[in-house]
Image (cartoon, rainbow, N blue to C red):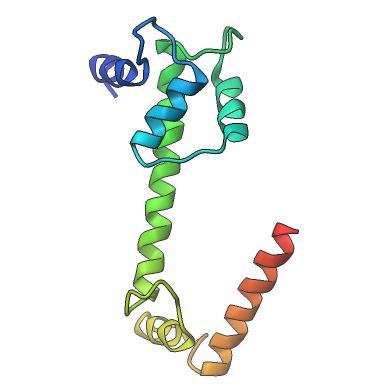
Amino acid sequence: MDPAELRRVFQMFDRNGDGKITRKELSDSLQNLGIYIPDKDLIQMIEKIDANGDGFVDIEEFGGLYQTIMDERDEEEDMREAFNVFDQNGDGFITVDELRSVLASLGLKQGRTVEDCKRMIKKIFSVKFVSTI
């Protein structure tokens, strides 16, 4: 990102124009962009890039933060796009038949049968459930 563009984006986040972004300014600006980050994560994000330790983000520190935010947003978009490939009817769920259809179209032999797909889904749920406990 060139310096002029970085400054322009920084000024959008620095609502009061004092040359530093507070946690509230950051949170409000991200929410306006449709990015919701829990307060705890926001604090950690600021602490990680706050090189001078003043609790705020200045223009120099903002470059790293902006890149982190954009990377997270790209990851979310990639996940959503991948999910939509499998959710063929767009109902927000991936059925066994949809999973089997996509795997077959990719030429993958894992998932040729409904039972294979059911096993995959059960494995995903058990891993997800265990990792959230």
